[in-house]
Structures are given as structure tokens and as C-alpha cells.
Length: 103
Length: 122
Image (tube, rainbow over all chains, first blue to last red; front, side, top):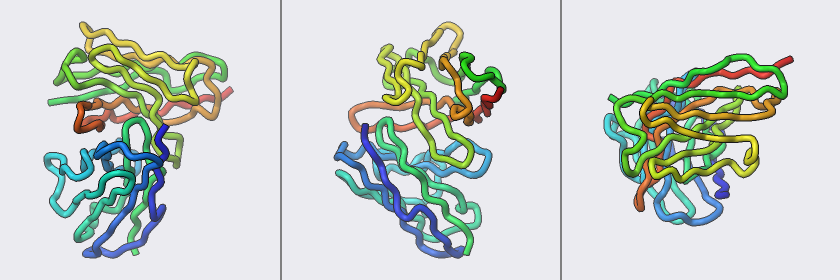
């Protein structure tokens, strides 16, 4: 199975900040990488798939990049509703998550 | 409008068998390039894929849970069923079903059910 790591595991940021989360895979599987946002008590929500394709309805401040074994999720200007936990996923594996909290 | 919804017991005793049903609407379980996966999340922990069943009947299961899991479907009822045997308190989690989209370019979960919390306790 593919192993995914995320960094950082926790970050504290302010509204308006640019935030970058990194996901590293134990082996390269093309651009089969997706990002999800999860808020407490809710199901995950798809943000990005195929490494860089923004899911319909997701604000353009979210973007994804990368290939091979290293991928990034960037939030260009953090909004109050973006405080949540973010997970990467590749095939049948999920990363451990990155919690974005209010500074 | 695509929706998925999990249903089943919320409380089990150790060694019992869990049976959860995912009822879908807005797409067919026979649509090419689609399938349904079961994913769980213990309280305060990360997501864990349990298994999947594609429209072409290809299936797969978590390596660590293989032998305890079975996923089946009834296309006429728009339902996918997860069976997990020999439940233990460590299996206490929120269980989600999600639609998986897969082709040579992508593999992701675009719609999720709201989840159901299953507690295992004597």
C-alpha cells in the first residue's frame, strides 16, 4: 500500500494568510492525488482531484500542484470558513491530516 | 443530485457482525468509471479506507482488515452493503460510504454520505 505523509500536521494561521500543506507519497503514482477538507462532525469535502483540478463549486483561493511523490495544497488567502482539517488521498490511502487553526 | 446515505446499527457488542447499507441516488451502481467505497474514522483520528466495489464488480479491501470485510451490491435497489465480522471496541468509528470516480487520469471520492457512528462496547 502507498504511504502518505503530510506536513505540517498542525498549523496556526490568521485570516488572509497564504497557507501551504505538503503531501508526500511513498511511491509515484502519476497525478492520482486528491485533497479534502473536513470540519468537525461533517463528512470530508472534495477540494482538488488529479493533483490540480479544482472541484466544481470550490473557491479559487484553493489550488493544488505537484507530481510524482510530492504534492501541495495552497490556500491563497485564508478565510474564516477554511479553518478545518485537510487530508490528501492517493488511490486507497489517506494522509494523516493537517489541522488548520486560528492564530 | 447525487446522494449517499449510510444506515445500520449504532451499537454492537464485541464479536458481533456489523452490516451497514449505503443507499445511493443520482447515479447508478452500474455507471462506468464509478463505484462505492467504505471509509471509517475513529474519533479524533484520520480516515481509513476499508474497501471498494466498482461498477465492473472489481473489489478490493484493506490489507489489515482483509478476511473480516465483504462488500456487495444490489444494483436494482441502489444499495451497497458492508459486512464486517468479529467487531472489537477498536472498530468504534464513524463509517462513511463515498462514490469513487476512477479512470486513467483520476481516482477520487466526489460525494460522501453523512456518516454513521458505530460504537462497539460490552
